[in-house]
Image 1: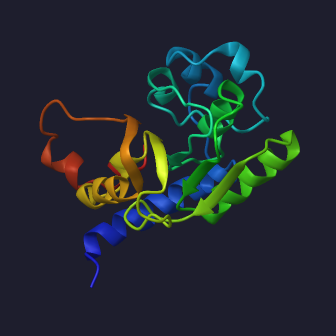
Image 2: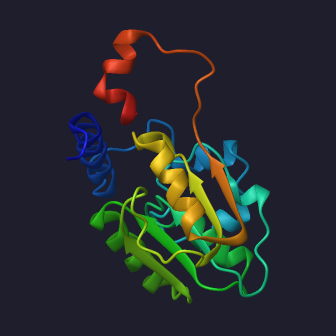
Image 3: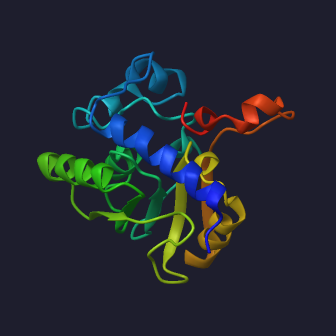
Length: 195
């Protein structure tokens, strides 16, 4: 039986991000300001489909990796596909790029943007970080941008990443980390997983 607390957190996170996918919630700061502050190139960002940047990043995993010709990559928690689209623009000769998101609404949004911009060799899949729907040893590189912090079972996520990466594969993560313990009332708040 799944841990009830973990399932409750996942349900709360899903509800929050489902509203974002439908533009019912937005970030207080514009997505452009968030991306610029994280070092995303304005020139590359201007090539994205409208709505791909939802201001949900907390870092820029693209700054730290190079994708060789034919190499595959997966973005874990891809949202509307921002980092996947930017990867395709930056590395047009790479192999297939995969976006994985827990929400059907995000996958659907990303697919529509991909098709509208005619990006090739990009696939989006619905799935969870704790049961990634890819074969073992099948991906060259993986990225994740501000998503693993939302999953309560982090060790399961890291086990899955290790499983799907090829020998010598690499994982690049931008995420939120604690420098000290949070106050008890904050740790018990469901909002801590959704803001």
